Image (cartoon, rainbow, N blue to C red; front, side, top):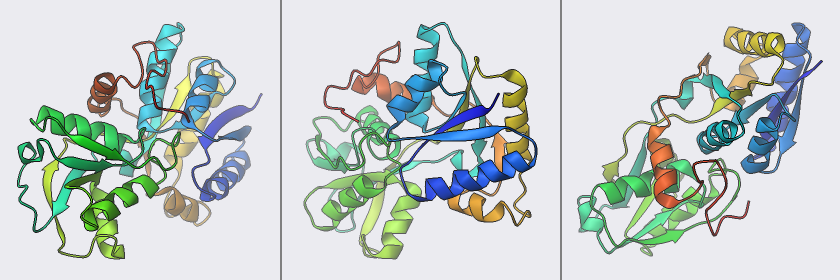
Length: 280
């Protein structure tokens, strides 16, 4: 038997990463292969149905996998995650000359967000703003890469551009991208300031379903955790994937997103897609 993993092809580099990891894992005796998906919803459905054993999941895909599995009498676990997946935050940014100085000042204003299914640039920051008292928001959404759960940075970047152009009062993005957009000039240095920041949350994880062959699943997890940045064979792959080391998975960092999903009516309690305008 071969351990079969799903990954979403949000960028051509995904092929390079998992071709390299497949070779590395096979060299260490693990029968391993992967499938590429065009969107996370199909990947999660195949995972819970047992058509694949593991899935490299976005945080939103994890929320759905957990709900869908429970509804089907199955169980999933977050086996490993990148060191860079832990304790992230999103920020709400305004132009430096704006009269907005807090989340409540955004009441009745226009806020730019990423794609409809972006945890970091749409779901979590909008829930944060509303909880902070920013009522009656007009949301301008940039639906680029729908189905990729915000892995495609295009929606966030267009939200930033709308802010720079004076078309909106604020824009939402993950804090790391605020720095990237400032460095690359999308947001000229010194032209913006942060008026709100979410609590920390976690990002992707390697999700395993309970129908996966146990010995192969355990070996897969052990090999991922054993990868060393000092290993010249895997270092370029780790750099492409954006990590220095794989960490044990945890689920404590997904509550904020699960609450946002419920507020937006994105999935129901059984993991069915209920967002009316979401077509991955």
